[in-house]
Image (cartoon, rainbow, N blue to C red; front, side, top):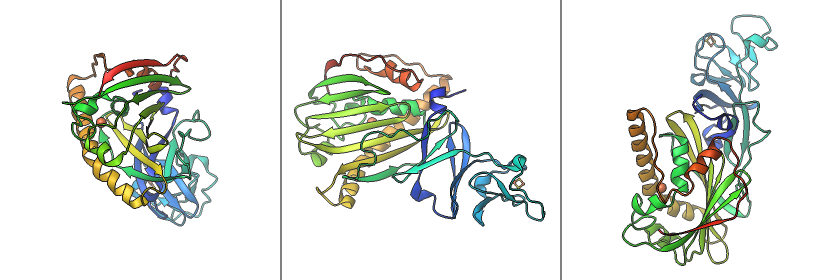
Amino acid sequence: MAFPKAVTDAWHMVALSRDVKRGGVRKVSLCNTPIALFRSEAGLGALVDRCPHRNYPLSEGRVHEGALECPYHGWRFGVDGACEAVPGCMTETRSDAKLRAETVRVYEAHGAIFLALSEEAPERPDLPPDFGNPDLDHFWWQQGTWEGRAFDAIENVMDPFHTNHLHHGFIRRRDKRLPVNLIVTHFDDGIAMTIEQTQPDLGLMSRFLEKDRSRSISRYHAPTIVQARWEGETKLTLCVTAIFTPATDGTFTPFARFSTPKGLAPGWLKQAAIRLFLAPVVKQDRDALARQHEVMTHFGHPRFTSGPGDILDLRLHQLWQGHRLEPSEEEIVKAEL
Ligand code: FES
Ligand SMILES: [Fe+2]
């Protein structure tokens, strides 16, 4: 199996609620399993994307009479997977277990749709702090499916050193660095890196979006969520929750939820500003992950060397694999970013 059990056993975000409207069908991929999501009067359904009859992809069907109809012979499946009708036949099919489509557990909250492929997943996804905090303005940003591995994307966002170089001018600068303290702490299902610095970053983004800065924290909540928080002297300036859903071995679907304190500026304005500044940075990361994946695919496997800046790498990998970290004292590393 390509993914650790801890990953296949977890809940994963696969779509925004607004992308699966009533009467709509959407194909998603999760850990190499294609799934048909659909919404009818009966609610939201998720079926493994293969008709139990003759293996036609159900995601190419339509929602009809409250069920998902396969385009091939028109069998209809309810949100619970039961076969509601075999057109042309008078037989009652609902209670016939062998005609059922395979269902996947669904959970929907905060404008997001989550799926669990495994029975071993807990009852609900475990969401990070402030994810649904009503005192903050939230908006979602979605970028389709990217080339590369979900784990490499997680490492990318947890790694501050690439920001001076790959994102030169946007986030930080490669020619002018600031002294920082990197503080690493372990917590129940993850690891956090706090960056303490005396002034905001020298890139464009901070100059426009941040007034003052005392610290930023990136927390990895295994297996697929990274939450970055920027805090000024007194309070939270911006919280970004990034979710990296493994779609296939070589692709992933990232989702980002931006949360900001209410009242500073209207939500739409903040949204426009964040999108404007972030778009080039996101593109740089997207291209880098695709190039990295191309090289790993060419050589048949990844090969990584850890340098002095790769403070978290082994531990990120352990968490991804489902291991827990021992409680430890905070570590402080001095660096220039
Ligand atoms: S293959 Fe789906 S109804 Fe026959
Ligand atoms: Fe980046």
